[in-house]
Structures are given as C-alpha cells and as structure tokens.
Length: 125
Image 1 (cartoon, rainbow, N blue to C red):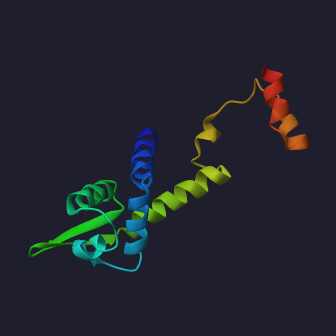
Image 2: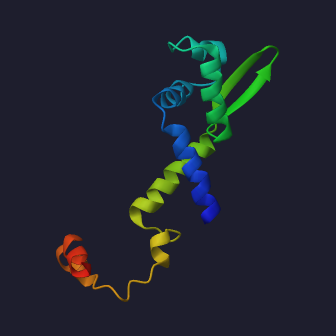
C-alpha cells in the first residue's frame, strides 16, 4: 500500500499545476501534436516540454514521437485509477488505510450517535 500511496502522491503533484490540468483537459478531446497544444498557451516550447515530461512521468499522458513531432494522448487507465482511489478514500472502502486502525482505545460511539467528531476530539484533549 505504501508504494501505491507514493504513486498517487506523484500523480497528484503532477495535477497540482493549473497549466498541466488544462493540458489534461485539452487532451480529453483526443490525441494532439505538441505544436497544437502549445498554441493554446502563452508559454514557450521548453516550458511545454517541462509540463509534458511531468505528465508523462506521472503516467497521465502517453507521448509518441512521429518523425520530428511529438504526439500526446491521455492514458485513461491512469485517470480512472486516481478516480477510483478518491472514491475509495472518500467512502472508506475495503482497502482504505482507515480499516487498519485500531480504535478500541477511543470512544468513537459519540460520532455514531450525534454525527460529530468535535466531541471525540474534545474527549482526547
């Protein structure tokens, strides 16, 4: 699970930049040449290359050289894995780390009774 967390952290870091998010959005329409992606931004070619490297290393984007041009497309499986991860942690699924916690020393019944975690935190202060 630790390896998976590191992979997801790297993927979230790649998505933490507004330009990279916009690149992902642009590529959602289909494969594009780097020159076409560049036209959508007020950035230089080296800056685009930097962003594309981050997106390809994180696994979100697949790059393919054809002649002298680079073409990029989204790796749908990578986006779906992040979506599944978010779903898992937001609903406490089977593989969620919260299932490995031992809460026997905590009075967590207060949370179940009134839906408030504030009372639980006050009991531990």
